[in-house]
Image 1 (spheres, rainbow, N blue to C red):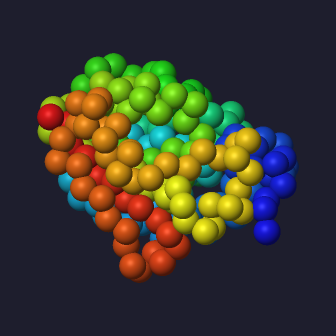
Image 2 (cartoon, rainbow, N blue to C red):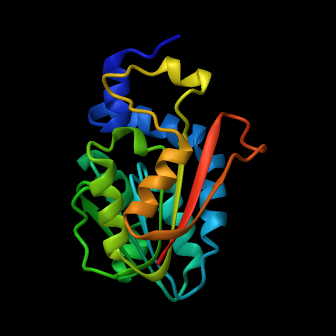
Length: 207
């Protein structure tokens, strides 16, 4: 059954009470994929890591517990999700170990070569300019930095449940080619059986 468009738009940028509820639901539904993405990053204690589209902040919190001598940052389109994640992660923010920003992946509010690693889970559908977004992710990553993207692929039967006016699905191979063109190398594509939800994970390293 196709999701109503107003629900899909809330998934893209949650706002208000409905947005808060959808954010919490999505957090639970996507927890396995987020955990897999964090594992693929192979975080080290000193890493500086970025999450694009962090929602209520569960994954930010988990990563902050792993990079105990590093730094976590996040950017999200939703002011309400920034506020929710700020409340959740206040102790890390107060210690200067986390920074959360409202913004877009197409214009990341961070300097060149700032991060060792970055991830984004189930946000690719909403990127208005995927090439610009990938170029920005390349820009803010250090040399030999790692990027992990997790998303539902184009052609998966579950994709028909999401309105095309809001969701734009991509083939993993096309995402890999896009990353190559933006200066990434060592692009690897996997479809984890454990997730069993028609998902793809693309991991790439800056050249």
